[in-house]
Length: 223
Image 1 (spheres, rainbow, N blue to C red):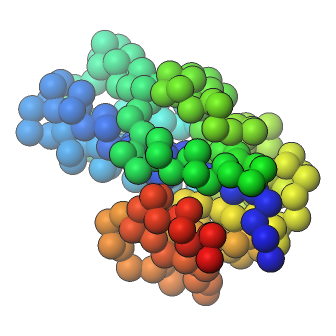
Image 2 (cartoon, rainbow, N blue to C red):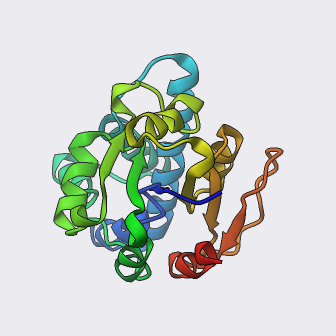
Image 3 (tube, rainbow, N blue to C red):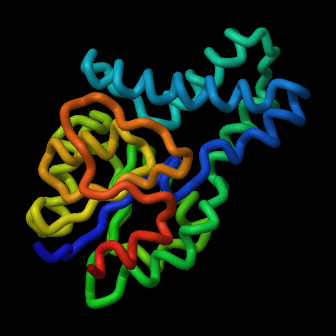
């Protein structure tokens, strides 16, 4: 089936969530990498747990709570100054080096491009704007209106409904394996950008393609 639309995850796929490490390191020397890893892990855990509990909070609130947990777990003092600075980092996350060149190539032939993210509008909209990526996308879709996070199936349905493209004609791109497989379960054509060479999650599904870089995708879908 032709791919009439490509839908991208944002955090960890287009934008490097561990770009916050340097700022963490400045506040707590020697702890930057550990803090970044635990912060991200709790951020994801809270999103899944809150969806299952039916107790939604915007991703910005979850991100703040995950930061507070991670600092407490590592015994790092966290004040208003550090919280404000680190939350602002999320509005300026660096895109991965393979992103700026790949997006224009993927948009050829009238194909629609969209972001589908757990990020709340107060996080994702400034980030996309600050990094100058708006011209590449037909839509930037947040789960906020649904009050549920990926990989809930109704989140992926949001892309189908907004873009008006059948799931069978949508290519979904994520560097998060759990997200890629959630999208595959839903019915998308899925490309997992496995930059770190991680093993496949055992969730009963497999992506249609496993790529080392987003830059490999234009050639892959052209074949």
